Image 1: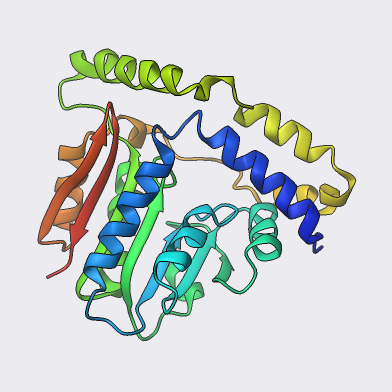
Image 2: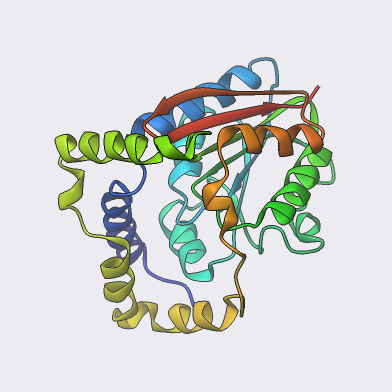
Length: 255
């Protein structure tokens, strides 16, 4: 079910554009995440990095450019996006098809010797809080001392009454950048499903999707609640390092 390099390039370029609608200051957020990874790994000669919910390899590709000596494991549940990543970003990562948060999911990653940094962007918000806590614990167990989990996502403020304000600031910033004019998520998937070269992968994607999702409660967890869960999971230090509106990069360090 492989796709051509040209097809993968076309769809990933369209993916990059449509994602700008949803990840405020997306490129800056990626840059900040790479800054954190670089800092954590400054004394590690060949660090091992895990990209959770990697999609078509957007963050993995940027990490590979910043840390060319790193070993990158890129994990996602979507076989179509993984195949696009394999074709367009060949050789930069070892791609693993896995459902984050399922029982035993970390066994499939092949990280028996540990991990230096786990990164994720807009990929963990579908997990209900109890599953998120188990996921954080699994990652803490994998990380070597001094390692980090770096999560870039949208986190609402502690005061629910301020949510409209932070969302408004984000929307206005995106409008000024012209990002609302790009293709959206639904139209990208509709167009991709109509590409004959992706038909088999799209069918596999439909078969492999979980029959039921989480409760969606994680969408409403503020940074303070994530911090509590991360501390319960064994991370001694947790801090946001970048924020615009409700888009934030949260870093958890393992002592």
